[in-house]
Image (tube, rainbow over the protein chains, first blue to last red):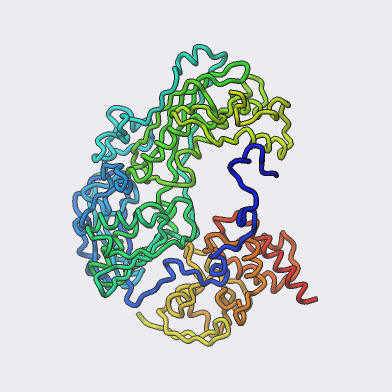
Length: 455
Length: 160
């Protein structure tokens, strides 16, 4: 496949030193010799093991917590509850002013999803920590739970998260992120055909081979070194600093080596409580998710629902598109308000449509909090949009690739969220795809350019 | 808890440790001896990241009790390079971009080594079969399969 110099002539230079050359990965020699140091490869004398007592209920009030039997268990060094955490309520994106703080480090009076952390047990061995965790008695009053986004948005649905006050994230634009461009109803009135379809996805687990975790070592100078596999080093450092009410200068984070992440390790989950454990015991602490926790507890890609209504002309032009997107955040925000917002910007797809209406909701349910995963906020949307494009092409009896040529955005087109299109290259990509896949299209499409010449 | 003595050869060196009865070989290697090349991905025998070679057989060290390894000859990826020279499998994994996050790599290399020790000229199907107990979440397996085939060809050239 050739680089399309006719299109990229002014943006891509010839004679590049690195591009197009095979270069060895810097980390591979460590990988093939087993020398790469992952966080769990750090072992310290006297290291304690942290195990979490988790909620067996989707939604419940905590009447009481009794840790007395667990504390007496041989090998147990310390048991932590909400009152031990200096600033127990947090939200990751507060660092960029996306609040309110809505999630507890350890449950305080209430649990909102099955698996929520309630009590942390620190013991000399993993086994002792596990056995003691089983002896913690939590008295729950089970509350009604809601698992479906549309149910959650109905009046009278159980309130998932009191810090929000309603089962959706309140943007500055209101109950959802909104994009309004042209007059979508006028577009539908003008259309030859209208197609409305609904697309849904389930949560997806990242399943990295290395589970989430960290090892924390107290240093002699009142500082703590945290070896972690976080994908978000500075989010984690800054949130740990807030949660622990400890200046960042007391926290030394060592990471960058991640045994698979895929977005699943951007939440601030294990580090703050492990650092707190190290601080309160004066001992190194290891907190590593079991494989079961990785699958059940770590945040998945959000479940989404996308409803797309398109108005299309017989000649192939899409004249109106209305999209309502729902992102299931689970019980807490984490990165989902941002994910839903990305969807709002993305939903027209790489197409120029004169009349667009988009609403995207970030919805709270009593499900496992969801978060980042590979293009979150747009990946499921792209699935929905491109299936919709195929259905539209079929509806008007047009080749699906030619249908996309007709609607492809080109340089200078105004996008629905009012960013002018630059460097689109979509026409050129589809021309190459047409050749590579041996899927011929009419000559007039092969003669097109992302530049609107003469326009 | 009662400790039991265990003695085995690891990558050619004698090791003797007192361990708690019930300790897995994976934990003994990593926490006692300090060979962290076998990785704990699942601790339940499903991912293959902890694979080691015991008396020539591919074994999951997370499901092997250390106390059953008395007198055994154990090999891990950490001991594969000789005198600083990479084993052909290690070289091939490097050259074929068969590593990404690297967490599954030591286990993959162990599984591939047992295959090549027994079947110096494996077919693609042999390679797929030999690696079927090792999960890689990054690469999609294809570069790993290619690396093992490249290493096999390098081996047969050396032998010829």
